[in-house]
Amino acid sequence: MPVGGGEAALIRRHFHALTAQRDGVELGVGDDAALLDVAADGRLAACCDTLVAGVHFPADIPPEALGHRVLAVNLSDLAAVGARPAWALLSVTLPEPDRAWLERFSAGFKTLADRYGVALVGGDTTHGPTAVSVTALGWVSDAMGLRRSGARPGDGIWVTGTLGDAARGLELWQGRDGDTVSGDPAYLVGRLFRPEPRLAAGQALLDTATSAIDISDGLAADLARVLEESGVGATLSLPALPRSPAFLAEGGTLRHALYGGDDYELCLTLPPSVEAEEMARLGERLMTPLTRVGTVEATPGLRGEDADGAVSALEPEGYDHFAGGA
Image (cartoon, rainbow, N blue to C red; front, side, top):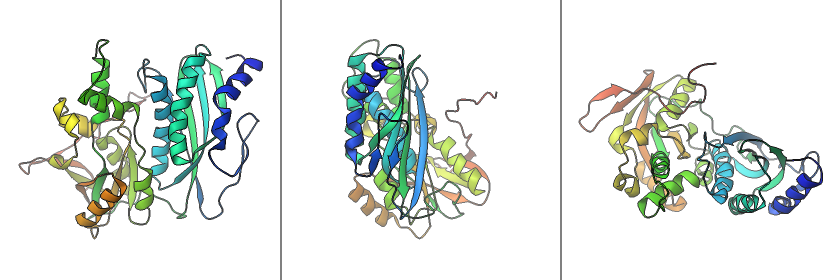
């Protein structure tokens, strides 16, 4: 988009109001840099994700869903370290400055930002193929925060929510042939387009979990990262992987649940002393089910145990932008 009056007017029209989400923004959208009053009782948490049309989201995604999604995937990263979100920077690249598209996009972004008290404090707009990028900032009251590297043999492996919904939803969206998506398919597509960051779960388990990661590239791939950084292995109970009724009704498979990405649930390891009843009560309070799906072991590698008790190695497959090498 052209620099000058056009770009400045676009920012004022669609994004200025998003600065007012919280106190402590001394200088926000529209200046060269943001000035923020950072809490002194914790550590600053920061993350950044870029979403490119045709790579991270279908090109025909509704703009308001994309506004939600680009913020949600960053809030999910903050959830994985147990952080409380506070601010965001947003960069938008578009082929043309489409006012109607931007109104819908910013409305979707604002709805989620309002819910979690996130203030938009800066960013950029540029001309080019459609892409959006968010840098999210927050803080962790516990100085250490949650990390990927703390899993220990004997820990239970737990996940929030259900798995595989977004991967199956993407297939249904791509195969709809112009038809309206309704019923169970609409639920699964909604899980793809509007993931729910599990911030409350990350914060609630900040003092309990030994490690955490958000499931963006698939359970097998993301858990394998935890195992590698912790120097341990694990066995998953494949029948225990939580799957939604819509997922089962619409042909979801174990492969979707194990290797499908974009669910943005949390995978956490918890000490063996944590009991299922305790986690069930927490899940009810959070309105997010927590399911034990496996056990951390000293032997390296990732394994799966089927309903008959047979154990086999699992490949840590998942989405990887550069899997083929540079």
